[in-house]
Length: 264
Ligand SMILES: [Zn+2]
Ligand SMILES: [Zn+2]
Image (cartoon, rainbow, N blue to C red; front, top):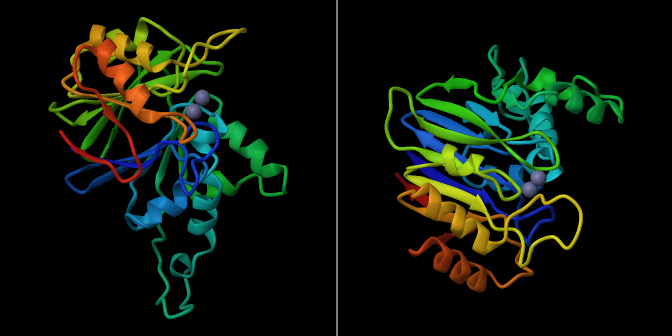
């Protein structure tokens, strides 16, 4: 499997960057994991968006799903998606309609969101939308997706992606407070990607994210072949975060950056 970081920012984009978006490719199958703000333009620089088989969303925070809106507009209004010849395109009887695999409540949330500007069916018309439940296993072409609940402020699932029939495992931890679930879910992954959002734990309220040390400690317990830390703002010292994650992991971790590619 081939994994490409499309965007890795936390809830606001890095300068010139994008929020959560990771392209997973296996054989002829392309799956985009998360589609946060800024992701669609970055995706277009990497591949043809009509060739994406499915978009899978870990949770319904804006930085993980907001660019479903421009993605849907492209699928709806771009010249080459129309049934008649336009702007040099011949017209098509089979416009792309990728699958959209959302957390519980996702279809209604997107309907409400785009309904605010009078387009409630924007997402459900553009994509073949479905919802998963924690524990579900979903196949998309050559890959299999498994969903495991992790604690965050909204229902959130880590996602285990592997070739259908077995093979290397990419486990994306999504966003989470410190927890045992991701340790069990990500145990033995070939590549475990964990958020390391915070320079220090939240000062008050319910925890929702990990520090770099916590990401490293979780990974040490899960013992993946490789650890990549992500969701770190360009306003923080990423090298310091990497050093802290590596120290807690007990091995060298890696730092996600836009355009980073991993082969597992
Ligand atoms: Zn996030
Ligand atoms: Zn979140």
